[in-house]
Length: 199
Image (cartoon, rainbow, N blue to C red; front, side):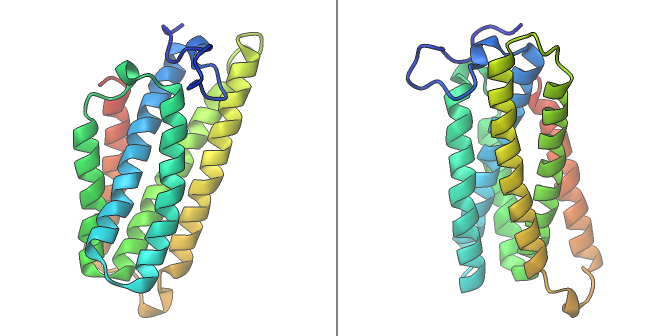
């Protein structure tokens, strides 16, 4: 078991009593916190660059959701358990949003679709890992966390599908450069999660 992540008696405790979560789930929450930090910065990066009204509305709506996710995770995960590389994740997130925003709407939507496809899989793995835990171990906190992750995942799927629906398929398939960028976004997301489990 991990040491306390949040105080059960604290008014800042979240719906899951993270002080009783297994160490693996504390590690998962660290990756979630870093990921949601990066997601907030992705949309801030988009908004810093684009002047396209539709893209700005898209980014503003999804930024609000990601900020709510981040606030919820911060109720669960004490600062000492968060990634020590948050400055890096913020910078990487901002660039992940700003660079495609400088190219155009299709690049933005392709980027968000790639990011959220990864996040869908990431949250699914965490939910499945909770389902494999002995049901006799801290059942209520685990199920509260599962419900919260399930809610987050549903939001991320909405973001993915929204981006996919806005990507203009009639304009042709992604260019080779955009395809390479999308691959790099997915690979970078996977690498960041591996690092965050430890740092």
